[in-house]
Image 1 (tube, rainbow over the protein chains, first blue to last red):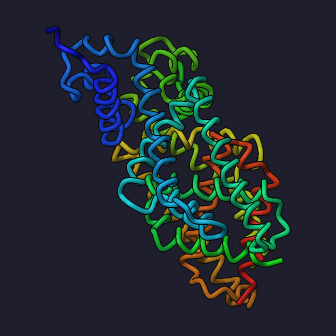
Image 2: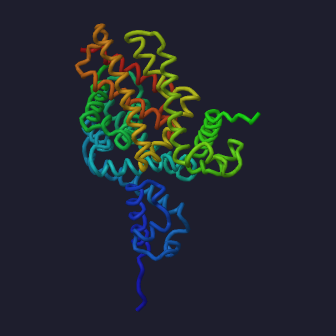
Length: 197
Length: 197
């Protein structure tokens, strides 16, 4: 019986290895040679699973975005109204080790993606979906009477994304400016503002 | 009479050329070959002015930080109290083309600096000086009775830096989330909070 190779499983292993290299050493550390060594593949074997390095990097980026989205969805679960919005906003902030790792990856992709049209598109799609989810939650809170701010929902959703991005950047490059306590206060201030007319 | 070479001038030209390459194509575009071509030097001539690429990159980073600091100092000038704090905070935000260029450079350095101890140290020093300046301005405003927030000065200064970093990141990677109008509202909200007990 011929050996069955699970291609999807191998691709996940390659992406996980790439993720680990980027977390530890940034994009420069993720060479094809290092990825192959880290994943336990012979040099040159990666090409059976990915056409080239660009596709591996793209896969690692997609994985980073999916991990964030899954983490948020788990924490929101079946909450409703302000409770759901609060869980959404809080769980997206880089306040634990796993989120810190995702922030490190994201920062590398921001830089790398600026010169790569495909990565830019993937990220813009992610930002758009994120913005739509937040806007829908905010609209629901407003319908419930829990939001009285004069700022339009579309802008409140953008502000939350802006807040999250600042926290993400600083959790990596200047963590003393983005401690969990500071990020929590920032979220609390935002929610206090929502109820002010 | 021997030809006089102005070494400092040449070094500035090399750093400017490097800056331009990073703005247009990120770190990956700033190879020694490209830097030499952009600055109008023969291949290999750069070594008369800098020991290696690391020192050129370091020079470009220092220049980016200096440009930001000089821009802020010009706008604050001889203002006092809340007026000075407002000018400081506003002028550091990426709300014009020059600041947008500096933001692009900074994003590249964040990523690159994570794996480079010397760049990390330079940036931490910059953040510390920035934090001290803000804290001193905030303390002056509080002494004048213009700040009534219960949040300690040291934390208000950190929040301003966090706000700025988010705006910097988003002005490059998702400018629709960091329009001048949004950034202005964020600043206005912050100042409104300062006067609330």
